[in-house]
Image (cartoon, rainbow, N blue to C red; front, side):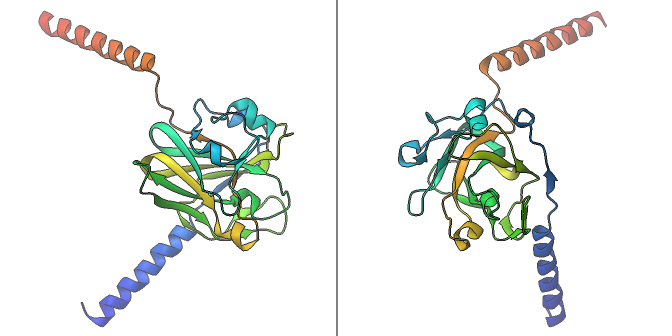
Length: 231
């Protein structure tokens, strides 16, 4: 490859990086938690090593509404969340306890794994834009959220209030997700990621649902065979 080709390839790579950094994020201002609740929430599998006031290991709509949370302090292990099967779409319910601080809604990194050992980096907030609420995401690495509801939701009353609910869709489905402290949170002196919940945007069907689907397919096959015999 000649020098001009190398230079052109380098420019193309820079342009691709810039496009990734400029990926559009849709911002909402919906304060109704019921518009964001899901059928399935991940389990905080290292709950015993986490601080916070979330009762049990799996959030519910009630605990999210109340602002109950888990968080990882400066030197504690990251927050681990597991689902019953891999999913590529998750909804992150941040917990806000420093309203007016730019970092609080984007306080986490996201990594994904299917063996619980090797984790792939998926998202990290580097900068935040704005001098007051609501804040928007600036520079980041990885995959940006598709939407962020950058207001507070729920009744609160826990150690914080649920807010800045963010939807992510990744190229690969993961069973385990790890949440550490983001660059912006570390830079602003508050590296203790705080979550009310992490939900599955494509919940795993219950066994009964699979049974109904199989029954329906069987009925369709039976009708098709009868029609074929008649013709």
